[in-house]
Image (cartoon, rainbow, N blue to C red; front, side):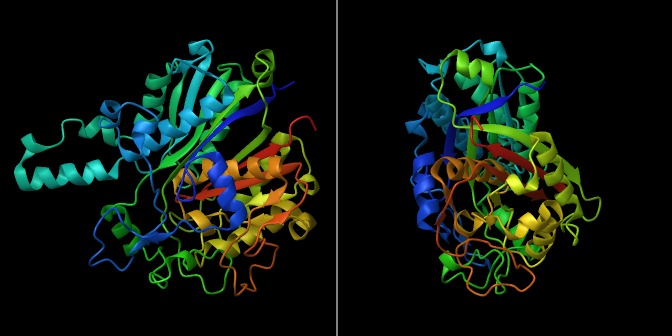
Length: 417
């Protein structure tokens, strides 16, 4: 029999709140975190909006001298991990209160420290190699987020980075689930982090014609998943992090258990480098595998947190994917895209949206899809338009799709059912 894996802590840094409590309040209020970009001058860009994290002070979570050695995506991850470990009751004098060799880290990250890459290239070309930032390499690489979490909190188990584009955070959770199930770890800090609201990323996605340009004057209206008038996604930044534990470990120390992490599934479309398979077969397969892994039937799921990017191609394909995976239950359950409020936080999305599922289960609410004003006829399910709804949730699923055809899905259950 598989070991049961439970959630005992959650941490959030996001455009709509820098704690799980703030994030939950914003989800219920349908509050948009998308606005004009403040972090750089957008002159010459067609895209001038993003879901930026506001009022983030690294000194609230760790020493300023340490912050100077971390890129923004790593700072987000360490701050979210601190929140999650604190809620789990696993911190003592800043270090983990468990056998450190049994405590691991798995984080998803898609892009790394773009701001450091850009600044070092600027110095290299304009001033020469001796003027490059000395910590360019250790700050920019994606594994520095889990590496710094292990260093800061004294966690000596495996410390991995999962890179599957926009599915990275979800796949990181799945990898962490397996580490605990097979007994390699008792505790894993897991989720996703991203901070790429920088000129290089905005420019690159703009050239792909992937970003919304139509509503730069009304940014809060720009991210509109499943709406007929959508015109692209809005780039966001965030970290969403869980503390996962074996049930035995959590119960032995009398921890509060927030939910059960019941299942994970993954697949590849083998179709296209940027577009999902139009019939949604790959994503549907990932969901079906996750449900099988969780040992629950489609009709037992009340809520699905969609990838829901607000792009022309994704939303109809994902609707087909949901119908294939859930059958008749697709028309009965609630579905929403919280990216309508946060924007698309790339690798941060998987962790952030998994946390939305756990908050929904615990709070008995369905987060809305805001800006759903003109329903797309191809997207004909119940997407919880514009306003929060309330109801009992015993099981929820979150799905993520990444460039390259990566699909991941995770299943959460109310603990004790």
